[in-house]
Image 1 (cartoon, rainbow, N blue to C red):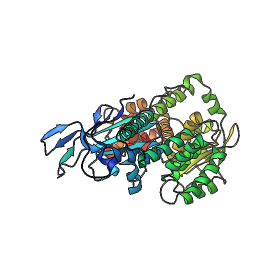
Image 2: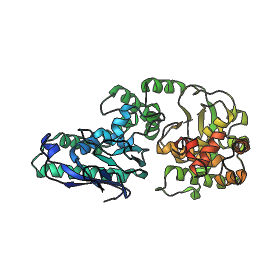
Image 3: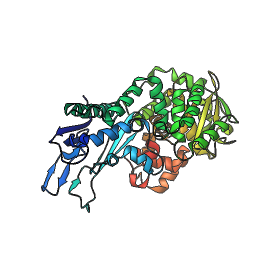
Length: 442
């Protein structure tokens, strides 16, 4: 069993109050993520510090089971998460009157990031949580840990003669769906869209139909991109705009890159590490050295003129993503969102990344604002491809925080100063306080 995510209950004598399933699962709970304790508490009553906290395991197991699909697939929103998102991702939502750890669980589909905050210093509660950390673990380790805990709770219920609880019924339903490829794919789209199970069947039917046309993996990215307010309107506008205009390009040069045996990178690396590694390999294959990528060279990759790359129409200007559409084996239609030259260069570099790694079945190559693993890979690739971090450090010299020099670096590499700043932050060379670190890294 993986020790990266552990919820370990030490069963105690049943309490006197509450339903049987609550009373009979009273336990000293130890919660640890990659050896970091989320259950370490300062107990005011006993005047002592412990790594376990007295709670009932049943409410936590029920919450994890009910939030299973959203915890597994739903990424963090770009804006401040709303109440609905927090109910599915914040452990305090386990409720039942217990004081739970301040844990937030975020996913990109490959990694699960768990953020633990300590109790407020001014808290008047009898226990204060002390854990303060942020740990990213493989989604497989998170799933294994949750599954082990839920089964442990179910075994406890069986032992005390409780065999028909809500947890039994819910976990049976989740397990049945996980065992069915069709049901699991549906729940994944549903979670990526930010819905509770069976909340919006009509919208999900439209997404499934789109999936058969553009590819299952591409549809998953579209689902995440359209999540939030008025997803149906967002999706319909995107589908309408995807049928018009665009710039015609060619994927021949990308196909050559795709067949390069040196492009392999460890599959267990993080999305941003894979993106950076792939960008370095692409630059080496193209013999770009450490020099900036010119508009002419970037255009050649897609068989575009400099004018087609940096100017012209923006079919998706009023949407939340940009899109490359594979028309056939070689031809591609590019639907830009950005009007400015630097923005269009970044979009093109992201499409290059997606062309290299997207499944062959995907007709759409979306570059979105979502925090999925695929979008993290794209953004990290594009940043490193356009601005090699070594070349950027050489350009900035000993003062990477100099604002004027950052602007000059943006002009030198023909990217926005914001990209320069984010690239530095994501390599530990800048202050995260000056920038939302996740904007480009994730």
